Amino acid sequence: MSILTFLHCGTAFAAYLDGEIFPHDKDVDLAVPFEQIGDRMEEVVEAITILGYKVKQVKAPFAFTRALKVDGDNCHMDIACYFKEGKQRFCPASRQNYALVMPNEMFLPITTVEMYGRRFWMHNPPEEYIKMNYGDDWKTPKQNASSKSLNRVYWFRPGEAYLIRDHSDKHLDDVHQKDGYYAYLSGKPFLDTIMPPIAEGCVGSVLDVGCGQGHLLKYIAGGKKFDQPFLLEGVSVETLLHDRDYHGVDGSKTAITQAKNINPECPEGSPGNLGKSSFSVGRLENYYLYSSDKFDTAVFSGILFSMIKANLYVEFLQKYIKHFRFKRLVISDLQKMDRSSLEREFNLISRKDVEIPSKAIKFNVRNRFVEVYNV
Image 1: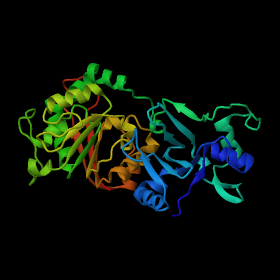
Image 2: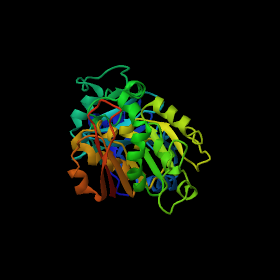
Image 3: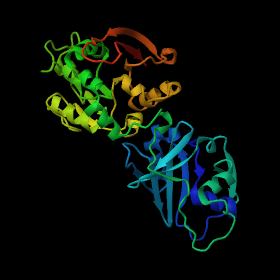
């Protein structure tokens, strides 16, 4: 099937050292870059099943398969999917707070190792990979040696490669609870100014990344918070909210609690009277890893882009686009970010400068841009 598959962990170690599997090993370990297998997962499972093996897809803690467990007569095989994040690749463990992490360059360029008279792909350079997993003294025979890989990273957070600094749940909760500017962002003068151009850009189903208190949903649907509810021209609420049409995600539990209070029809993670709209708490820099839904439009707040390294804006957005299959991006820019890379990669269809009434706050932030891109 032309899928690049590597000998991995103890199997790679044994092949390089002895040319055969260690007698005490009870399984075969393989690794595969996720992009080689992700869109073909069902095809791969079917092909292995046809050969007479039983296959289990392991998803936890993600919304899609992170590993395959293959069983047959006197044979067990683990196939680990490695996700690319910046200069690293990682495979998360299930029910434990660690991931196997290695440099991306160990996947390409590739090399081979001989085992049982055949050549197999192996991480490159082999000795560096083995040393990283089993220590500098890997050539020294050991009695009752642990088979646990040393490249386990506990409390590993995928997405860290994109971050300027850590924005923990506690940090975001403190911001929403104590920062006067964020309180102003929840006020009617701000919302009536910024929401129309954002809502105009929303087509079909909407993923609101950094949704805060969920005002966008209320504004699109026409709710109690606004004197003159805004609706997309020619689109009714019933049409707009037809099939899980809105999902808001934010890193702050406080914000999501407030969002559910403002939108009581849409409790967290479950459908309500406004179609199947919902909210959830999640780390924004890697939320694409944890949801299997598809959306037509993505809305990204400027606050989110204050977290992301400027030279990685496009790569970050493309992660979301590839997973959720967006047709349109709506970006609300709170800071002076370099948009040239976005304009080169995506088709800018509208840009509006929004003058923010700022008499109520002391902060010197008056202008905001709302840009709409076709993907």
